Length: 512
Image (cartoon, rainbow, N blue to C red; front, side):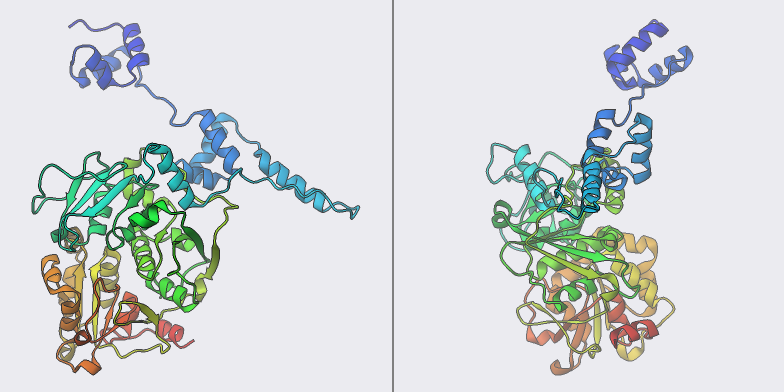
């Protein structure tokens, strides 16, 4: 084939943009050959701006803040400021100018009542409202549509689960195959998710099959933790209803001895009702944005387990890093407006969150213990332990050896096979085993069940003396023979069970 002239290459580049499409247009020649011709002719690769001036101007007029604008466009605050400077968008938005005019009028020296100018969005909405409206716009023909449906094959906890993208649930044509994993990235065809590989929630998190800003419908026991990825996950009845969004904002920093389990216990301690009909919790605040993805997933799952219809965390850098290139630089704006109206707003200072313990009754409900130091005889990391729990337990117990009298008192149950492999590669499992802990694989933990794992951690003690501390709430009603169940974070459970020496820091917090 004759080598194209430089002018021909430039014209082809303006039409087809990329080397791959130029190669396809020229008859399917190799892509590297187009790149070679460009270099030989001195033609630079095609480059288009990631964002146009109109896009940057529209986002700037809506928010007027580099951080909020960058978060909507899935870039950093500094990157958005660079785009503004590139396009010469340096003036403040109109609504900020009117707000300053309002302050000037209120501070007039005449003392006369000034005109109260209020400039707000036409319809300030919460994050829940934005996700539902976005879903209705995407699927206008279906009244009860969702971006993704998750349903069990036979309604049992051990049956395969179908993940079906689209406005309605669709079943795969091929049966599930044991040992297969979910495909990476969002797909367009329904796929099977097998409980044999562990927690369904964490399998979805690992596979990144559902993107942030989506509305997911499915059983709460399966989809409740997806809110940690900026996904609105609800059951079929709650997805179509209006809901009652409430806002829980965490201010300042969390104490180093506290974790997401302590946040949930602090919410229950303050008596904020999560079990009212239709309550959807929106978390906000800098401490929430600083949490890792697995901590966000655990926070949302525990919140739903305590009565909320759904829970969601804001999209941030941690979620962006988790998805990587799958978001392609774009993310639908699902952050609440500044003047959004909630059915209730609660503020919790980070320094006010303390390590606490909860008690799980026969129905699986969680109650905050009045005493600060329960008698713990065994610790279960999990069941369905996420990476942050295993990593934290390994770092705390490293260098210590569990006494022989308490052999088997520490059980670690990874959530999925992927978490098990990750902990093995990082050396966390080896650290726990060297200290005397027992690590259960996913298959054995599934066969034992919740009550079997608790009885295994309690040992041969009498029923009245059994007190097993778990870092996750029960997925099935506990039986009296399993003993008394205590709920706490990993640090609190290990420190107050005698498995590791107590730190003065945690003791002082618990006695305040």
